[in-house]
Amino acid sequence: MKKLILLIWTALVFISSCGNSKRNDNIVGQNESFLKGKLVIFHAGSLSYPVKAICDSFKVRHPEVEILTEAAGSKDCARKISDLKKSCDIMLSSDYKVIDDLLIPEWADWNIKFAANEMAIVYTEKSRFADEINKKNWYELLLKKEVAFGRSDPESDPCGVRSVMTMMLAEKFYKKPGLFSKMSVKDLNYIRPKETDLIALLESKAVDYIFLYRSVARQHKLKYLLLPDSVNLKNETLANYYSAVSVETTGKRPGEKIRETGAPMIYGLTIPKSCKNEKLAVAFLEFFLNAEGGMSIMEASGQPSVVPAPCKYYEKVPEKLKKFALPMEKIN
Image (cartoon, rainbow, N blue to C red):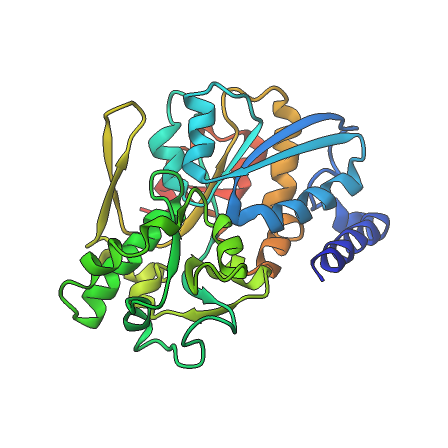
């Protein structure tokens, strides 16, 4: 099914590229001269499915471009750039603040927000109590001795941080003192580096439930429980409410700690200073951020676009990408 969807996307893009030329001029790459070369993209594991579809669509227009993608937890992606000095042309993070906190200003100059998401409790029909779980009892079921649940590592992956915050917000919302302390120490042997690693645990029945992004659950055709907005980190109007919780994680340097505060889930992207082909990277991001290009694929994959969004680094954004961001003075 996934391969069929990707083929359909590629076919649609090919047809559109051969059709209305005026409309095509509004989509990335059509105004670019012949593009070729290698493009290296580090991206969050939760973006694996849409990134593949977007890359395939871009290559229909530019078959001489070789795109190499590498999925990992967003924090691990950032540390590959900063600590391991690995070169990449584009970084796509599941939390725009990872770029702010770990890459700017030493390793990148700017950051554009591009998509939203939400936390969910994901399971299969074989999960214990799958027929009983709901918005009122999910935390009680996960705490049962016979039930196992997984989550990703907060030190490697924003989804891990958000899983912890979801537990904290659940204690606050359901008015259950001590709930977080109980959940946070249960099933520690099922913590994995990135959120997509958890799917293997779920499908092998090693765990019954996992904390995961709704978009990834949809893409993998998994069952999921939608959580109240006061818990799922989705609703922008609840930003102040989410900010009541925070998680301490490792900072840029050994021994350094940063405190991550609860906030609506917003993804971000940048072109690191280590980029070896900026012209190609900018052309790809023009396609990626365009409503008729990559963002239509993101939307179909379950992640609503937030383009254009306020950008505090607007002046440093490449000229061709400024149309996908908003200067802060227009917001204030």
